[in-house]
Figure (cartoon, rainbow, N blue to C red):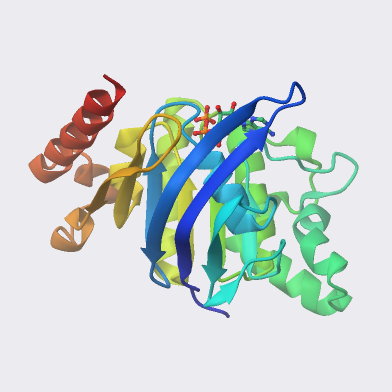
Length: 261
Ligand SMILES: Nc1ncnc2c1ncn2[C@@H]1O[C@H](COP(=O)(O)OP(=O)(O)OP(=O)(O)O)[C@@H](O)[C@H]1O
């Protein structure tokens, strides 16, 4: 199993040129150092460049300024070391859950037996072993997201990039998946870059919360979160109501509101 890989955003900036020829300054001079194994949540107003940052780390776009390093190496395109989880699961409807999870490994030419073992292990982690032979349309929205997470886990990347993965789920399923993801993150020690609109979700999941300004996005708050390490014996759900948790959540919400004015 490969463990987490560090990420460096080195004076990253990005300007898009629209089809109409307008320049959109999405991200301004952003430098962030993310150590291997850290769970970082990014929040900020709509359009502040969160997805642009994620795409630059994934290697889906070349930033117009600065650079991204993953494990100390410049990112020049997508790579096996970085897995991406989107808001929509994008599963192939004609493939079973297991075959969907094996897909990344199949593209890499991993032998069938190895693929199967990795898929089963990943499905076990997300609690979907019983549904291995089901088709995606037989799964609920939450289960489809679990399947997408398993597909990324099966390829064993050092970095997992998540773009509002629970944004389309109902509140109860969302809480459940947050608990599961936190358990997996602690167990696997991957580096996780997680975009969300929910400050509550960010404080619950993150070892650190980064708050971005309105466009052009830059870091306006960089907040370590150590609540869960202080409350080791509490159940995950109980963590959400400890005073430190609610205070931090309010402080971050306030920082976002202040910056919007
Ligand atoms: N391909 C593109 N061409 C032109 N402008 C773009 C393109 N992609 C994004 N933008 C613009 O860049 C800005 C940042 O977009 P981005 O998707 O990174 O923001 P975001 O913080 O993830 O937004 P949201 O929270 O709404 O998902 C926005 O103003 C968006 O309209």
